[in-house]
Image (cartoon, rainbow, N blue to C red; front, side):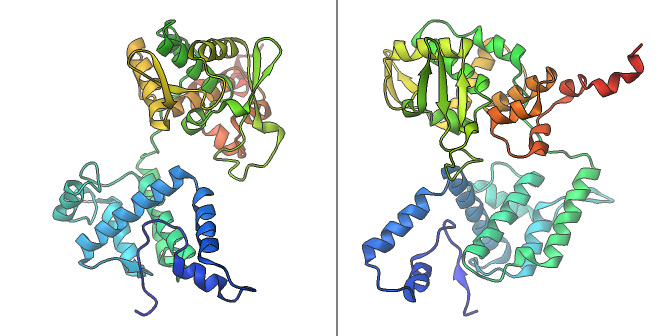
Length: 367
């Protein structure tokens, strides 16, 4: 069709769209100005979001070629989106759980590197890929098949079907204080041990920082308070992508966390730039850590401590909230440190052991 557009490698506005948008604007813009607009659009987009969108669109394109035998173009038809859903969502049949994904297509997607393993994805992954495709249509101002009534109703019923089967989203285990102490015990006074101790305590005690926030921590935003404590200003985060200046941006790093951070900075001789850095052979302090490196440090310390469970970097965040729940700390105080804006989101982190401390459940035990 005339309005069809090739699928975008990302969800950024194309040069053609920029030209159309600017055509009727007063005056004319030089090519350098249009390039500057594109660069600002790119810089203002989260790297994690951009990568996840690009990965989802690559998968959509590969599935479309293998399943439907044609190069994907936008806008997609409603039928194509419905086919994508039933190919990736399992349904209960007399023969057990099944989806409509052909075996050969599934195998080809794995062999080409678009899937890690055969079989249907998690429900969360399906929801994410539909959301990405919907966003692609919105950005290009095209008729959006993902907002069609049939698609929305099928996705709603699919979610309910998964819930009735008890297939709940898988969450990383909470790294509560008792588990954290075991990890800290593996950190010696070597340069790597000092770094990992400071990193774990900084991430946990300042409110459960995300791995991207830990990797991006910079001396510019660290301010000493008194002889020991620090205030770290979280100028940008997932819940504050516009950089709005609020009191909740200032995260305390106190007590043991402050002592550990001070020891690491002194040993690594860091006075500017990234706080947490890679350590090369020979004890050379190098470039800043990546978010993936933060995850690996948590997993490595869990292995050294002999801690069993599905822990990752996000376990520090969920562990902080869970520990706060165990101690019945005010929800407002917890949210001020984590940066959550939704009470329901914070409550979602509370694990069963936090629920056991709910005093309302113990009314029958009162004298």
